[in-house]
Image 1 (cartoon, rainbow, N blue to C red):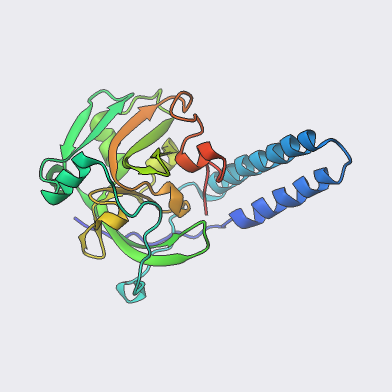
Image 2 (cartoon, one colour):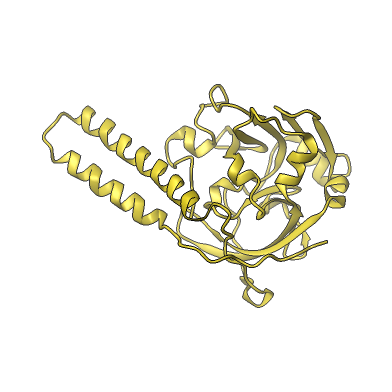
Length: 261
């Protein structure tokens, strides 16, 4: 049964404030008179430690806190598509044309029972519906309604191992010629608002919004919400997966792995 959970009270720590603090600290290093390479490495280290501090602080101040949820009256009249707007892969184009009737989601890795689930099977699982705000790292926001099974329930169904530390999402699209992927840790994977959405604003996802399935991890910025998800893998380390930093944007060095808001 679909349900809406209301946010709990709790403190919120500003990611922007932490990054601003890190940038100020990095700027201080730049004034120290050391060589450019040392300054660059030191600044990167400061920002990395700021990311770790932010993640620790969010979890310490309310690891189970919910992102704010809204009413249908708050839905944005236009919800921009982030990231890839489409997929060129021939198999995907065929599945799209067939309404994803033969599409399956693979769940594997450190699990006791690997799964291959059709879109119909995902719709038959217990569903969660939530109206939340999508915050893009580019500076825009929009409110939309999402529905799908909770990721935590799917991982329990697969029997995720105690050895797993991360959940990796492999996607059907290429972004600037490179496979798009993302990852989150187990704390966010089992958060009640982390769902695999197949529906947006009461209708099946359109291609631009990640059809047939996208991740919604509501306490993180939009680039973490992987679209066109085809495979989910439980792993104990991110090393050896593409660039080894846990996501497309993380590998190219533009954004941090933890994007909590």
